[in-house]
Amino acid sequence: MRFKPKPLKDDVNFECKFCLDCCRGRFIYLTISDIANIMAHGHDPQDFVLMTAEGGKIRFFLAYREWDLGCIFHDPETGKCKIHSYNPLICKIYPFMVSHKPLGIEGEEPFEYKGENLWLYYDESCPGIGEGEKIIKKEDIAELGLKFQKESEKTDLDGLSRLLNGEYNGT
Ligand code: SF4
Ligand code: SF4
Image 1 (tube, rainbow, N blue to C red):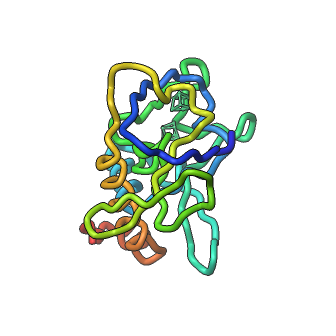
Image 2 (image 1 turned 90 degrees about the vertical axis):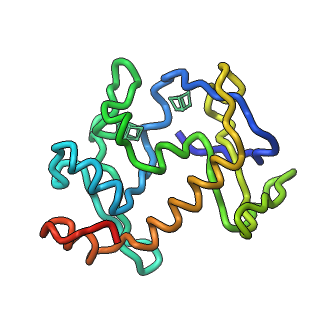
C-alpha cells in the first residue's frame, strides 16, 4: 500500500483498525536505536535487518516475508504488530509523516516547531484516521519527526558495526 499524503492541518482522532495494510509492501526504515531496542528483546539482527543504498548513504530497513511483502513482525491473521511495545520509531509515527520541505500538495502549510518549519501529513488511505477517542496532537507528531531525523543522522554502518561488537552506547 502506498502512502497517500494529505496535509495535517489540525489535531486529529486516530484509532488503528488493524486492516492489515500498512505493514506490507513498503520500506520500514530502521535507526541504530531501533535495531538496538529490538535486539535487546532477543531478536537476532540477521533475522530482521536488511540494507539498501540510497543517495550515497546506507539505510537499514525491516526484513519482509516473500509471499506477501509483509514485515516479519506483522501477524497476517490479526493484523497486529508482534513487537508493538518496542517497534521502530517510524512505526510509531505512522499514519503520519513529517517532512522538512513541502511535498507540493494542495493546502499544505508549514508548522513551526522548536524553531523549525515542518510539513505534517497523514495517510489518506489509513481507515483509522478520524476514528476513536484518542486525539493525536500535531506537536507530538512533530516531536517524533525531529527524533527520527536525529536518530537517522546517527545511523550508519559504523554504528551497526559497533552495535554488533557490543560497543554501541547510544551515540
Ligand atoms: S493502515 Fe491505519 S488502520 Fe490500517 S493497520 Fe495501518 S495504522 Fe491501522
Ligand atoms: S514492526 Fe510492527 S508496526 Fe512496524 S511494520 Fe512491522 S509489524 Fe508493522
